[in-house]
Structures are given as C-alpha cells and as structure tokens.
Image (tube, rainbow, N blue to C red; front, side):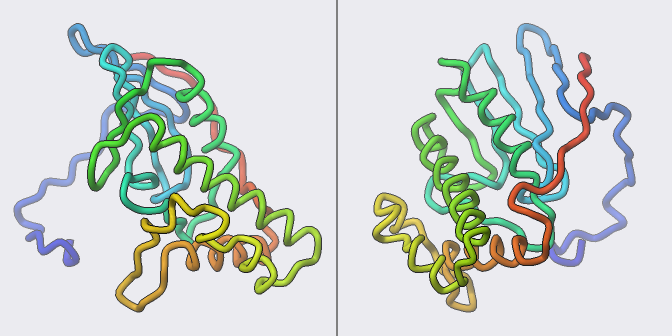
Length: 195
C-alpha cells in the first residue's frame, strides 16, 4: 500500500469467494472467459485469460510488446507449466489474435510468439550450458542478445541501476540453476472448474 500511495482506510479487505487451482471458465452473458493458472511467473499466482469469442488473450505482466520478458529471481519459476498453458492457447488457431499485457501496447499473436520463443530459448539454452559445465561468462557469450535475438535487441531496456533486462534474465536464470532447483521448477496444482 505504501508503494502505491493508497491510504488503507479507503480499502476494504475482501477475500475472493471464487477460486481455482488450474482452469476455470466464466460465462458472462454472451461472453466466455477461460482462465488458466500458469504458476509463478511475474508474480506468485499468474493467470492468462482468454476471451475466445473475440480472440483476445490477456497475459498479465510476463510478456509485453516493447520489452523483454523479465524473470523474477525471488520466485521458483514453473517453466514447464508456462509452456503447457502457452502451448494450449497458442495451439488453437484464431483464438488469440489480439494479446493484451499488463503494460504497454496491445500485441499481435506474432508478437507474443516472439516473446515466448525468447523466454524458452533462453531458459533451455542456459540449462543446457549449465549441464554441460559451461561458466556463466561462456553462457553470456552464447546468448548475446544482438547476435542471437537481433529483432529483440531494441527492447532490451535498462533499469534504474543501468542493468539491462536481458543481462538480468541471464543472471537470474543462472542463479536459479546453480541453486539446484533445475531449469524447469516445480509442477503446478491441477483441477478444472466451471462457473
């Protein structure tokens, strides 16, 4: 609350009365919203929301048009879960031609696919480098943004300390790998619901 400058007295503590662990479908008049939990990504409980009638996919803060996906080092990412959910929504042609992220401009399906390829290529490539006994410096060279992902290089913004998102992604993924958690994290909970 302090970070966003909201006075606590203006807010009511309201717990949700409808929750889900894996998938949930909401029917709201002539609209359907398909929700899928895709685990720890930008926060500890990220979901994607698909509105199939309009071909709109809401992806939250992990993917956005004018930047690179930024991984959180304080989470234990469940990358296999991301892959399963994103494969599911991207595997249905026409269902997500418009992609809305938590920040910035609306994306196309092609924009999202580019972001997803970057995220998984980086995770899987660094995991292989780690398993092959490479050093962090060798891994950095192998995953140079300008040569490996030239179309994404302009999106590699700097934070307030001058660190780029790509350099931080490499550092965070490597830290996760060296901590012994493995490249893919844990499996998420299962359980479908309809509402």
